[in-house]
Figure 1 (cartoon, helix red, strand yellow):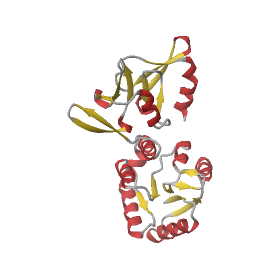
Figure 2: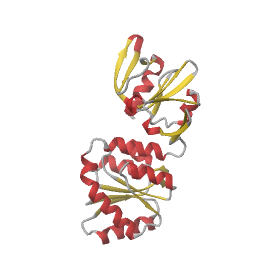
Figure 3: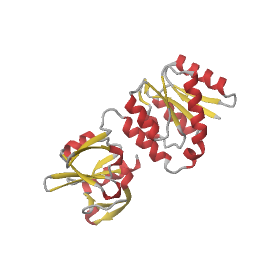
Figure 4: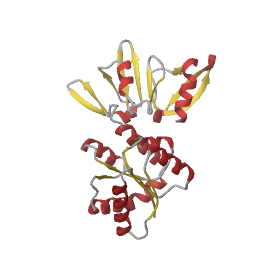
Length: 253
């Protein structure tokens, strides 16, 4: 099994390599990469490994940047000291984690989990989207959940489930799959600052859209764009000509 380690602490990387090779003599460490830039360069110029172990905080940034720049279907096991909430987001997206300092028993369980999930993860077309959802959740600068006050209930809504946000008549609504929608107590401007711009785009004064909800884009009159989504919208989502190019560039990221 071809494995890449992304870790900027030499001692930690060497110890992880030693444990992996001890646990499974079929494991071949293809590279130990120590930075975001090295990770991007290596993954772009080499065949994809079968598994990646990645630290999160590297000397030149967060390792999330690597997986945003390089589209990969390789499963990733993050090595992290993040809090329990972040760990839960890994579990829900079928990506494992190791808490530092790494223990051999935990590493064994991670390899066993990878073996069980390998066929599903690598073959599934949903895997890159699931990885992107994890990256969105794990960015500490943006909301992971929004509390919705609905009737007598307070409902926590995961940001990754929001298909689009719609503002009309002084009210703001979040739309979820299966045509569910709730009013929220934020303005659309406030929500724009709370959401990761890698995942959400402010289309116009009324809409913020999740990239995973976009089904296709059509040319509209006067160099505008019409955005069709996988779920019904209260009205057409039209992007003005001034934003059209930045929107298309965002789609390609």
